[in-house]
Image (cartoon, rainbow, N blue to C red; front, side):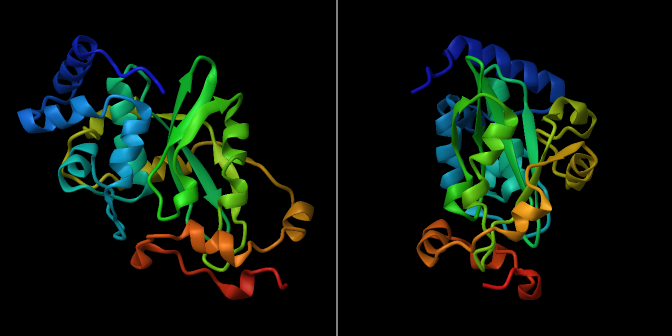
Length: 233
């Protein structure tokens, strides 16, 4: 278990962000954020939110108040909360084939990487900070990164992306759509994790894994894969 951030330090950090965004956080919002004071508590908050099946991309402030998020919104929310705990607000993109891409918030604890994420799949969420590299962290998702017909679909991961690059958008609190951040993330350098020969030899996941991964999923938010692109059994 990670030590929760001290209240005094949290107050300094959240006041810094309030000044940066030139916005007003309500007392109720601040009280909620004060209780989301460790990486796993961020994950617990996201696990309790509804999965957003729309194509909008809303700010952490919106997610906090509406308790609704998809993976991009969840990653930005987690990055913001991590920032309040002293971590840089950093996200990482994962590219998939015949499936949705995935975005996670990443943090480094004592030299090891961990992650927080919102996903329609139960297996693509929190990762303990035990991974030596970002590739190693990404590969922890590989066998569980499935489309709805059981294909293992993860293909690449990006360089870390610090959301401070997007401060001009007031990404923490704006009421505007933040699609631009996703577009910028697509342009970040990505690294393949698997070659074509390996792809050709991938097995289809068993029903037990697929069913457990999709437990509680918002059906409206699931990617519909092209079965013609699936490898024949």
